Image 1 (cartoon, rainbow over the protein chains, first blue to last red):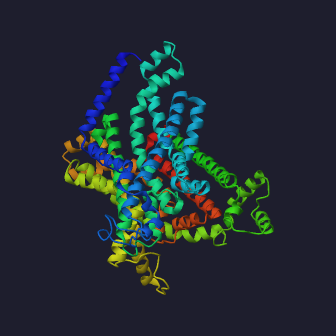
Image 2: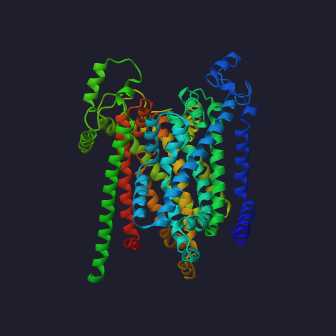
Image 3: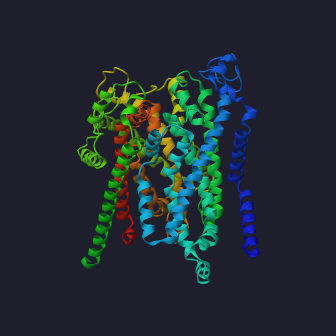
Amino acid sequence: MTSLAMQRRRATARRVLTQFRNSRPGVIGFAVLLVFVIVALAAPLLADVRELNPVFARAQGNPQWAAPGTFGVLGTDHLRRSVWVQFVWGSRVSLFVGLAATVLTISIGSVVGIISGFVGGRIDSVLMRITEWFLVIPFLPLAIVLASILGRNVWNIILVIGVTSWPSTARLLRAQVLTVKQRLFVDRSRSLGAGNAHLVARHILPNVSGLILANATLAVPISILTETTLSFLGLGDPSSASWGKTLEEAFVNGAMVRNAWWYFLPAGVGILAVVLAFTLIGRTLEEIADPRLGQAR
Amino acid sequence: MLTTEQPESRGRTRFILKKMLGSLLTLVFVLVFNFVLFRIVQSDPIGSLFRGRNVPAAKIADLRTAFGLDESLWVQFWAYVRQTFQLNFGISYQSRQPVWNEIVSAIPATVALVGISAVLSALIGTVGGVIAAWRRNTWKDHAITSGTMVFYSMPDFWLGMILLVGFAVVLGWFPVGGMTDAGTSATGVALLLDRIHHIFLPALTLTLAYLGEYALVTRSSLLDVMGEDYLTVARAKGLRDVVVRNKHAVPNALLPVVTLTAINFGFVLSGAIAVEAVFSWPGLGKATADAIRGPDLPMLQGLFLLFSAAVIFFNLLADIAYAWLDPRVEGA
């Protein structure tokens, strides 16, 4: 890469950063996300993982269904486990599944979208037909069916979300690649003898990377909410409790009839905060990538 | 007159026929997909039926024959297609009743609940979006935009749990679940009131959860339109602000909202799985949630097929509505 291109890219990065810093929703979203990332990473320091084990909780002499204040910060559940510990460790699982599933979604969507848009012709129409098919299959029922067939563990959940949610990314990227492909510098590079691999790596990808990033940020909320719903319906991994799993256990074990709000409020607030944070960041990035949107919103 | 009209309507007919053919192809894809998913990936349905319990081999063999699992894949697929068109989806593992009967008996509850919520959220969301766009960057806009975004960002069933605890458990204003009071013998108006009493909280939950999308789409679509010259012209003619908004701006901004509505109606049947489970609402969603616990695979398969068919059908309707409302579509 020439140093000129390098300089230009660095300038672009600086511009994006400045614009992001000037956007209040973007900064708020980033701050909230940062807090939760720190909580998830520092989980071993904040909460004793052994407390998740009912046998350990009983041996500790924890009370059952204790309200916040009478025991710990957030009280205990039907198995005498501390809700705070579940909240802290649940943030790890929810964030991890949300991010990993998004990486898979965006990878499949980008590969399909870029190939479809760049190669065109028959491959394009076949790929787009498949994409359309996946778009009409109702997303949540498909995820439910796949998860029930594959079995209940974290990797299957990630796989299920990735496989079901890539089509919109593919369509978006194909459209963007089609417009980039028309630009003069692509023709110029091709006439200088550049091959397809070079064109995609050096001209197409750098010009759609902003869109990929914005799209990825907006895909995380969908992944997290899907994981939550699947876990709530009993398809979550029994051995690693996410926030959705906490909500399921609270529901199944009658926390609502007991008005044990401390059992199901924290996990939901956690999901809401993380989803909102990613949405705010994603919309800010989208506005920066496409300034026309900024006026419209 | 005739000469200009004819090719136009022929183009439209061709567009609709093309879309119908596409929908048919998609339906075939869903059938194949559904078959592959359940027959090949799930290699041992009988085993999952008993979940590792000790069952005599002879009984397993009998069941395999009864479910047609010993035939070749092609025979199984052909039988599957034929049965599907005869609305025969097999026997539910859990209730031992035909899947189709189970599904049919759950449809009215879901259509009532999700239908009401879909209409209410589309109306309220669109009005909210119009107000937000027209009063852009005022406190009204900020309140509507951030409010709808918060509802949009929470799991819908969690919102349901909070409303249920607040209004049913603590305040006792509403029943905690079901569609009617247990053992009620009410008829006529009393029965209707009982139903409304029961549907209120789940419908409120879904309405709040769906609102956001309509408000955001309407808002950004109207903002796009608001820069157009014809609005300046309308204002220059001295029309009042309300007339400019309702007669000139909103009709032009509604196209994406119409599409969104049609597409969302396709998801009506499958839209409320977790919320129905929270409120024990006896519809397709609760049937799905119950089938997962089994897992009751014939039931899941039938429900999945129905959900997909609904989406395909309403997508087709959306395309046709689009062709009707926007003459530019014909070229597509």
